[in-house]
Image 1: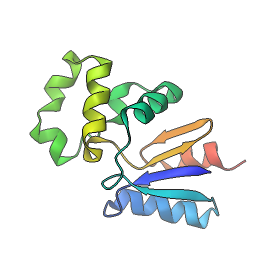
Image 2: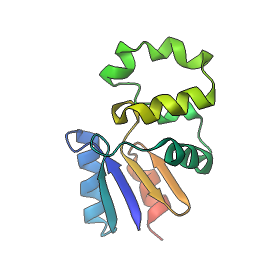
Image 3: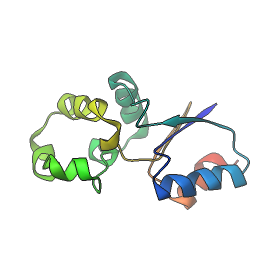
Image 4: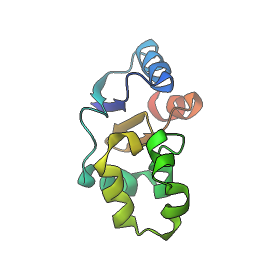
Length: 118
């Protein structure tokens, strides 16, 4: 089963969930604020995604900005970045769509369609 990890108050997450429902894709919903991804989960998803780790950060979030991460991330190790992401779900870019061989970060309808609809 595909995991849909989102923040219910986020409008992009709401659009993504509507798209999943309209596309009749079964998913397991997980609220990122109530059930933050663990360090192990984030490390697995990062490896599976082939994306730069910076893509997992919610760069438009208030917490990202208040911690000054734009300037700090370039000097941090991957382990430090993963630990930081695991410390607060609001730092993680969302929504996330996680499947056996699927890791999508953020909602871009064309990407989601290409990767989920066979």
